[in-house]
Amino acid sequence: MPGIIVEGLSKSFQYYKKEVGLASSLRNLFRREMLTKEAVKGISFEIPEGEIVGFLGPNGAGKTTTLKMLTGILYPTSGSASILGHVPWERRKAFKKQFAIVMGQKSQLWWDLPANESLHLNKHIYEVEDGQFRRTVDELAELLDVKELLGVQVRRLSLGERMKLELIASLLHQPRVLFLDEPTIGLDILSQRRIREFLKYYNQQQRTTIVLTSHYMNDIEDLCKRTIIVNSGRIVYDGSLAAVNRQLGQKKLMKIKLGEPVDPRRLERFGRVRECSGMEAVLEVDKSDLKERSKEMLEHLPVLDFTIEEISIEEGIALLYAKEAAS
Ligand SMILES: Nc1ncnc2c1ncn2[C@@H]1O[C@H](COP(=O)(O)OP(=O)(O)OP(=O)(O)O)[C@@H](O)[C@H]1O
Image (cartoon, rainbow, N blue to C red; front, side, top):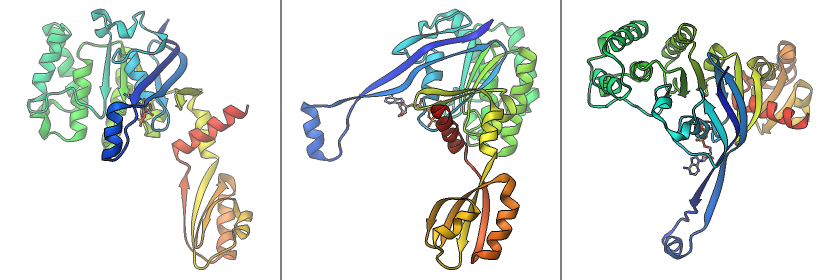
């Protein structure tokens, strides 16, 4: 049975145009221009219970707006959504007990109090009975290795420690659907890995449906078999990450520093020339040709230095999007 059903969901924001300068501000007092931003444009998908789905997309693609609609924080402009049979924006108590949202950029813990206090507050809000509260806190604090930190004022915790406690606070009532908006943002690699391991374990144990947005490809690769990619408010891809990886992995970027200016035409035989400005150039090279091309380039060009880089997620997504649009 699908845990989440979304059909034709859209959200437009209306706001007034703000102009710079005193004269424009005064003019705005009398005549304000209304603008509309279509953040989400009729997206549809279904997620079966227990699945972990990655929600990927460049900045401003509409990920957070979608999550906000699915958790009832925002009303949609049109379309429908059902989370375990509930309409999120009706904000019924029964729905609130079924889901949780964790935002990496926003804290639900009281800053000046120890996390323990916030956990007790959530216990009351979600009407969690004493036994379940104790068992859940003990188990999760042990798993996340934060037992000693429950009594520490939240403002004194590191970002990674705080995120672990945020997760405990959001899982106290054992939600069946968990929305995570950039849960690992700003964390070091080790902390990111700990959070991912925890989420994987928790999903296997509890069969909680998880929708995760992240800019870190590792998060998505490690946790999600299925990825929904949004771009400019539309779904441009829904499927396994393997295809995205193939798209990203086939090519590499070669960034070259030259000892003297070179005609871009001389670079073309080594790969597709993306940029060439005086003494620097960026070439797109097939992964399979990389070794050969590097060797030839060092032999035939006045290369001072070069680096080989992966194509960024954003770009991979854009490439994929261009392919989808063309097919
Ligand atoms: N309250 C608002 N009023 C006007 N425009 C908004 C509002 N909230 C979001 N937007 C716009 O809607 C678009 C989608 O924003 P959203 O936050 O959903 O993107 P996102 O995919 O989560 O991006 P990011 O990865 O940067 O967090 C953006 O262009 C944003 O500026």
